[in-house]
Image 1 (tube, rainbow, N blue to C red):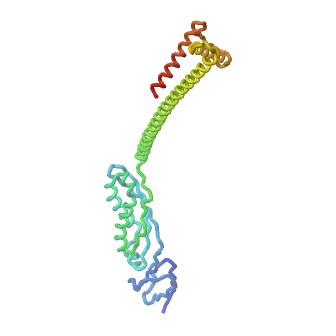
Image 2 (tube, helix red, strand yellow):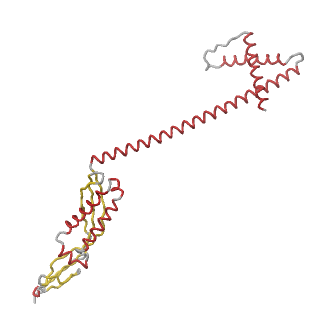
Image 3 (cartoon, one colour):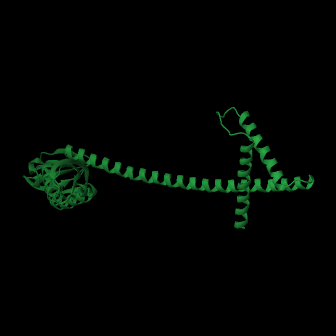
Length: 287
């Protein structure tokens, strides 16, 4: 008898025929065949995972043309390797045809934004449909990935412009809110500063009033024959000349015109005295 040897590689499966009819599957390793009995190795199929990238052009519900890139990983099932060997002549074309059919039936029912959000659902629907069909031919679909969704260039440009406009609008809103907060805080700070300034001025005037009252009483007691009004006038004139002296010693001041003369001094004294009396009266009313 005539015998020949054949070796089936690892991660492969052999198909053995006898007189042109399928007989059995040959596992990886060395096998003996008898050609005289019509036995021979008809072919070898790889059981490794293969990858197929499919590019589909279709239209969404909102009339946007897009290109979808699907990556399909598939392999031959060992127990059904005879079906894969005899049933399909070109499995890649068959898988591609089913992907086209499912995607073009599903995507036109979705808007572009919905397609981006649910691309995983599209891949899942494609997987379920192809898995049922290709399983009958001895192929197992391992994974389907929706690798990319590419809208038309004009649509991408429009989407970018819309996104940029929305972000600018949002930035303007935030900027306006920030400016509003700054204005409110500034107004509150100014109001607080004016209030504290008013409290400070009131306390300053009250302190001046108390100090002058004490000085007048002490001077009147120590110098007999003087009235409180005379002591007040003397103090006012002293303060007046001290002020003129300070203005003259200050190098940062520009020219200041001050009315000067006995009558003006008397008027200034009366004005200061009236102011002090009003401050004292306000304090009594508050208490």
